[in-house]
Amino acid sequence: EDQVTQSPEALRLQEGESSSLNCSYTVSGLRGLFWYRQDPGKGPEFLFTLYSAGEEKEKERLKATLTKKESFLHITAPKPEDSATYLCAVLPGSGAGSYQLTFGKGTKLSVIP
Amino acid sequence: ETGVTQSPTHLIKTRGQQVTLRCSSQSGHNTVSWYQQALGQGPQFIFQYYREEENGRGNFPPRFSGLQFPNYSSELNVNALELDDSALYLCASSRSGTGGFGYTFGSGTRLTVV
Image (cartoon, rainbow over all chains, first blue to last red; front, side):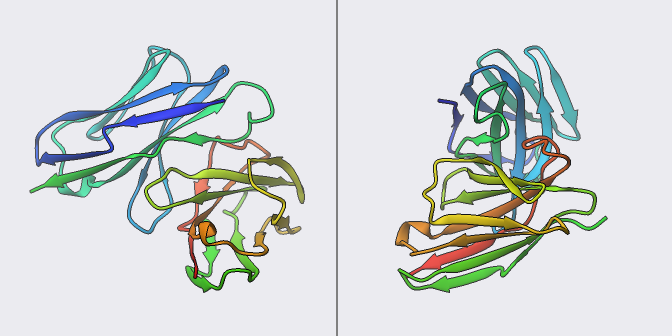
């Protein structure tokens, strides 16, 4: 069974204080690992897709990295508008579930001015 | 380019009732997936529709059913509502059965069962 565990559950940062969010996963043949941002009362907003170990992607203050067992979302010099819940999800490579994302519970990030 | 539209935004139902939620997919997308997100949890896959047929289902009972229409819009129906069905229901559209790739999510329908 595919599993995704995110840590920490919640993170409070001062504006400008860089940090990382962790996503550990077990999946039968990874086709893709996804990061989403979700604001309260809204649907998830796509950030990145990572496909293989060693891959990195960047967007503004966010950088996502991938190993064979986990992914990190690094946030550099965050601003209050980065406050949101960050969700990690995996798509398996084969089997009956190869069309569905398995999500973690998310990390709720609060950036204090 | 229009995004994914879901209706209604909020809904309160009584245990045992039936509910229908609606989703209009993004322009150019022909696949619709539904997810349930309980408070404080990540979204859980319910099912996916492609070419008006269900082509994948998660671990949800048969009282969760759906439809996809020729214009690629979709409905999620839940019969015999239970208190645990209270959640945010998310619709995601994508192209050509890609399921998981290229998802655009709607803002969801918040269902409360009392």
